[in-house]
Image 1 (cartoon, one colour):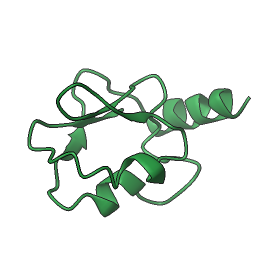
Image 2: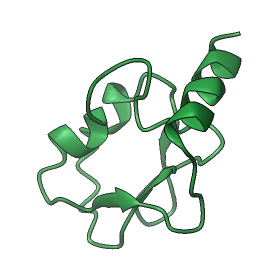
Image 3: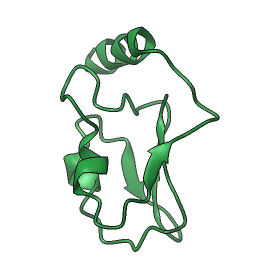
Length: 81
């Protein structure tokens, strides 16, 4: 399952450099996560790094992009090329 940044985002930007897949970018009103690139850090870290560093806890699982651990790992491998 990809992650999503809620509207509670304060645009601090600490999440963007932490993403190993470069899935986070600044949007019009707040930072956004590209679901096709988000692997929840599976294959990189034990926990999603953006969630770990977010000072306002505005990053959660996206119910519209549910994926299993195996699917996330396969996505990570595909992104790594």
